[in-house]
Structure formats: C-alpha cells, structure tokens
Amino acid sequence: MADIDILVSEVGPRDGLQSIKALMPTEAKKAWIDAEAAAGVREIEVGSFVPAKLLPQLADTAEIVAHARAIPGLTVAVLVPNARGAEAAIAAGAHKLTLPLSVSETHSLANLRRTHAQVLDEARAIADMIRALPEAQRPHFEGSLSTVFGCTLEGAIPDAQVARLAEALMAAGCDEVGLSDTTGYADPAAVKRLIGLVRGVAGDAALTGIHLHNTRGLGLANALMALECGLTTLDASLGGLGGCPFAPGASGNIVTEDLVFMLEAMGLRTGIDIDALVAVRSILAAALPGEALYGFVPDAGLPKGWRTQA
Ligand code: ZN
Image (cartoon, rainbow, N blue to C red; front, top):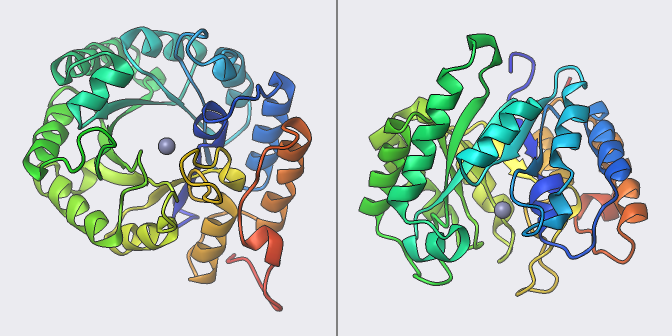
C-alpha cells in the first residue's frame, strides 16, 4: 500500500450479486472486474464458494477467480462458508479468504446451520490447510465478525461475546479479523467502541478492515469514524448494488463511487480514477436491466476543479 493510503475493497460481485434475484452473465462479471481493476481498484471480492443450489448467482466463482487472478496487481478475495469452500477457493487460486462468523449464535445457526464452536472448528481446519501450502501460495485468511453491530434475531450482542469470538478467531489461526455490519445497525459511536474493543483484545494489527452497509443512511459516517480510528481497508459496492429489501431507497453496501469521492476529497489516496469508476456502472446497467443503482456522485458529477490525489 505504499502508493495508496486507503484500500477500497470492491465487494459488489459477491455481496451485491448475492442480494439480487437476477443472474449476471459470467462474461459481464469478467468485464466488470476488468474495468474496475483498470480504474485502479486493488482488491475485489469476486464471489463466494457456497453450493450453487444455495446461491446460483455465484455458481461461476471458480471461473471468475481464475480470470481475475490474471489481472496484474489485483488481490482476488472470496468468501468461504467452511473448510470445503476454502479448499475450492485455494484450488482456484484466490489470494484472500474471508470466513464469516456471526457473533449472534442464533443468526449463525439460521444462516450457516453452525454453532460458534463449529465455525471455529472450520476456521482451524482452514488455517491448517493454508499452513500446509508452500509459503508463496498461502492466501491471506480473515475471520469476519458478522452481525457485530446487532442482529435482526437477537438484537444487540454483548461486548464480552464479541471480544471472546475475536480472540477465538485469531487463536484458530486467522491472519486478521474484520468487523461486518451485516444488518446496517452500526452508528459511528458503535464503530469506535467495537474497533477499540477488538483491537484491545486482539491487537491493532489484527483489525484493519470494516464492511459497512448503508441501510439507515449512516454508511459514510461510519466509514469516516473507522478512518479516524485508524482502519485502512473499507468494503464498498459499485452502485450500492443489491439495495436493502427492507428499506427501499437505501443502497446495499456503501457506494464505492461516493466512498472514493469522500476519501479523495479528504486528500487520501485510493489509487482510483473516479471518472473511470463511474463509467463501470454502464456494464452493470446493461447486464442487470431494471436493477437499481445508487450513488450521489454519479448523479451530481464531480465539483468544478476536481483533481484526483496523485
Ligand atoms: Zn454485506
């Protein structure tokens, strides 16, 4: 990251596409990833190794990983629900694996049909699998603390439980943990509190990234607080793809175009050309007719005299 200050991690091809009914053709996904990488995006979560019958939208993930790996300088990230998914991700050549652990055990059982102990067993199995690889081939392994800002089933999760699970993921062999506002419950004070909590038990180096949704309009405010607290990786989705089924008008993930605008306007280098990034929306619009795309910057345009940070 020598030449950038903040890593904007595009998660639209995974989080965005899994949230909509339409299937994006494989060739359009490849064109999307190519165009974002060409605009300067350094990390893209390109899919998820879940059974195709659960998420047909992401059934072509192995092919997408193989394609994205050929793009110089791009970190190819994927979600893996378990060790079996990690095995497929490693075989495909992904650079970064993220295993979600829902800090709400009710949510974990409902979504992954696994208790916390079972997810931690998967984390250990994945870490062992990675350690068995030659060093140069080992993917980065993140454990993501999902529903960490609150769960639609359980509500608020006690801080002590979050701290215990963050420590347990690191002890299981994760390289780092991430905070994930799966439900869009986060607010800036909670972002500050949980970053302090997790860094307090796992160390500053163990937490560098956050995954935010804009469900209640606080996405960029939360991102700003994460920056103030020293995080350097922010997830976002082009056009806020996916939206929120419970909150019409709200984007899904924070909008990549708006996030990059905020960061660059603050003098932080992302390495991303906003005009080129906004142009990528045409690929989504053509491949997903009728799907809503969000974002203020694409509609309003850039301010007079705008200059991307060199
Ligand atoms: Zn998400």
